Length: 325
Image (cartoon, rainbow, N blue to C red; front, side, top):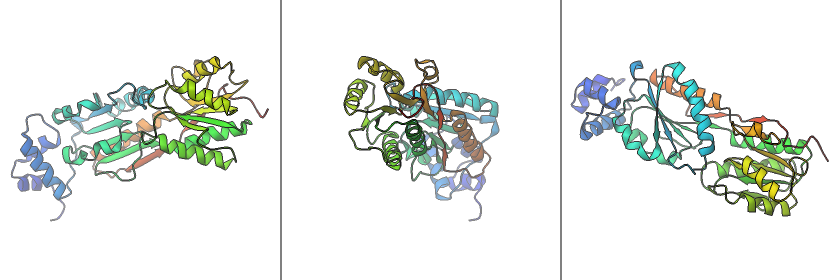
């Protein structure tokens, strides 16, 4: 069969063209068997619908657990998306990940999942026609109409380690927010080890630790690292910048006089801490723009890049010492 049209899908599925249109726009009054039948025919013949500009609704899927490791960046991503999408004519609806069944009855042209695991959406093309963009995660293989926009974790880790090395730090401890096997934790560890080895710095497991899902372990972990004689701490992810300052005060250490600190940027804290914190940060505006580009491309029937990777930025402030001791 030559290029398949919506008329062909309707004929093959044994329904009207308007029914096919309602299926692809997730009209709530479509029977489940009809919906499944239309999707099955569309998958079989490789048909991807174009979506009406009049229904430019984008659903943003957020973590449903406030302790989830990526929660600290969710607000900043939401803020960036809310600045980027409406000027392009999109309307936004926010939906927790544990309430995805609501998508069956919501007309939408694209969805954005913040910090979700790609494996959670392996069956996306079997349930929905619009594209899904997963933000802040990378996957080697993705199903049709699932895309990733993420920051370059290895490059971000290298930015922090290189800055500390340039300032004379030679025994750098690292606490990575989260657990091994979750989120970006393993990618960050590999990036940190690679950067430390590049500069000939110690990189054993005793210096590179995982915090777990919350902040409860930071004080103990920092105490252990201080006993290893670290002269700097890099703690990507979570709210580690706040907790680390508290922990150092408990151990009578001053930043940056006694120890240098680099954390992940927290818009409402990092700049106003004492001292203001040097941080690595995702370019949230660029992430949001890349997400919108993917959705716009698919609405218009154009190809979109499956995986978009963007560089981190280093924000230099006063929590890293000025130069070699």
